[in-house]
Amino acid sequence: MKLSPHFSLAELTNSTTAQRLGLDNTPAPELLPRLVLAAEMLERIRTVLGVPITVTSGYRAPAVNRAVGGVTSSDHTQGHAVDIIAPGYGTPYLVASLLAPLVSTLGIGQLILEGVKGKQWVHVSTRSPEKFANRIITITDAGARTGIQVLS
Image (cartoon, rainbow, N blue to C red; front, side, top):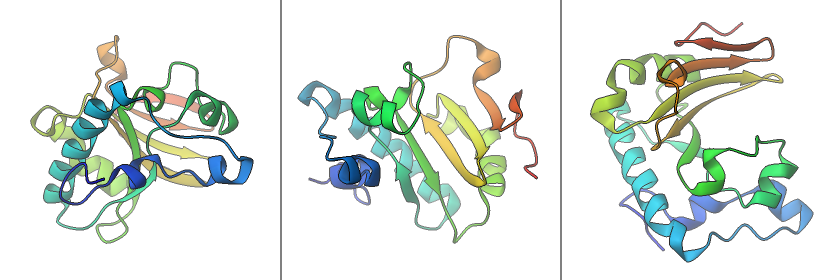
């Protein structure tokens, strides 16, 4: 099922962790409109980047979210969030740096540059956090910092 011209439900629900552990990662029907909004946000991001986007994590059923070590309040479990990379554009730092001044224009509620356990990606959500300071942040093994920071 296509959610937008370039993103499908299968792509936004694919989980190697769910497959490996035999967990169901099917979203409830009431979450589909949120996944459509997430796909539409990804389309806008794709247009700005000018290259394809790879979804590394989208919707996560609660059991899948626990298995990957996600926080219980994760936007992934509600169909709001997607983790992406865009190798054709550059590093996650470069992607996040381009997107940061455009979050409102692109309909990004939260932008997180993540560099944890040797991996890097960009987390985008359609839902804005309660604390405005958490709207654009960088998370590393050392903790969270406001804004997009250079990753080591």
